[in-house]
Length: 247
Image (cartoon, rainbow, N blue to C red; front, side, top):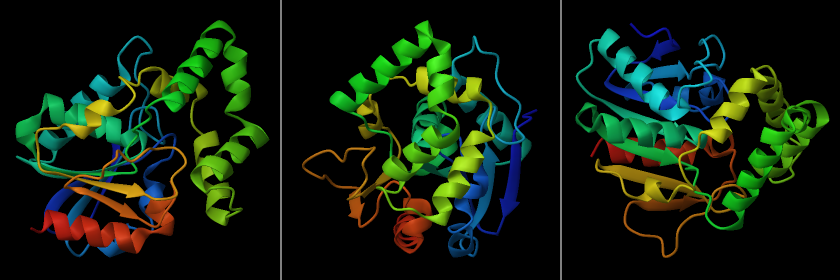
């Protein structure tokens, strides 16, 4: 039995929602009202986030997430479900799809964590520094540094009340879990672009974190949004999600 913290909202086809880095299922508060009349929404808090217990540090984060998510699916009595996953949650969703493809009807990747080139190299450098000096990562992911990171990368420098909410949410999580999420990323995201279920990719044109592949192929949609698309471009995200999953 899964011990994940979760909520179920709405009625219809089951749709699992996977949040991003360090943010609980509160990330979906703007999207839920737009989706709940079409789907039975299963909002989870991934291991170590919110009220969900953390994983042992020796276990692979993404593989373990997939395992406990499938336990939850069985607990709910669902044969299959679709998935809407955001940011680092896209890597959880990808891992789940690869391990349990027959359990997934369709998948929507929102601002998927595709980090080619210097972005991936920079992240690996930072992770390497933290491995030697753990105090560095703890310092970077706390206080005003965390707020500045959320504002600059998530909201493109816009001072928004939601940026403060996201910072409080991320800052309330276990620092060891935040580091584990980044350390265990399987690759730079190229594997996201080849999954074996029906998939739709939603990219933000102004997203400073993720990189939309060029040329934009079939199944890829670009919207006028930054990395805060779940709250700042909820109408566009809902429209593209409903249109795809109701096909």
